[in-house]
Structure formats: C-alpha cells, structure tokens
Length: 106
Image (tube, one colour):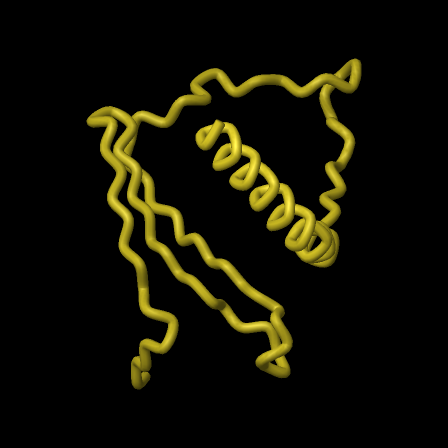
C-alpha cells in the first residue's frame, strides 16, 4: 500500500511539472522554428539524382554556431561555437568548444 501511494504521488508530481512547463516549451519551440524552402530539383522527372560517392572518405571540419534570441541583447549574437572534425574512415569525431566570451584582438 505504501509503495502504491509513493508511486501515485510521483506520477501526480510528474504530471504537474509537465503541465506547468509544457506551454513554455511549446511557445519557445514555436518562436524559434524556422521555415526552410527547398528549391525544386533540376533533374528530369523532378527527382534528385544521387551523387556517385555520397559518403565522404576524407576527414572534414564543420563549424557549428548556435544563437539565442532571449531578449538580453539588442542584436542576435552567437551563444555557442563548436568546431567539429569528423574522420569517417577512422570513425572518430573531435569537438572543440570555443568560449562565447573569447576576445581575440585583430
């Protein structure tokens, strides 16, 4: 009986937290969602032609930038910067997080 009571209290608490935070999460997702328009394909029949070698074999580097428009700044600034190096052959990924407040004189 005690276990059932504890389980019901935990379930009610979880439902209460979800009900409290769900509108905030839905509003945040709705405000940050972006619409992407994909141009029509130029290939015959309107279907995309796959690349012969779609899987890269040489290592490549990608810079990931994340922004946040939380109203603290007048202009949108980059909140997170991560440099990612992917080695598909060695199946190894290296990530370097660049601090947001890094000051580099040029």
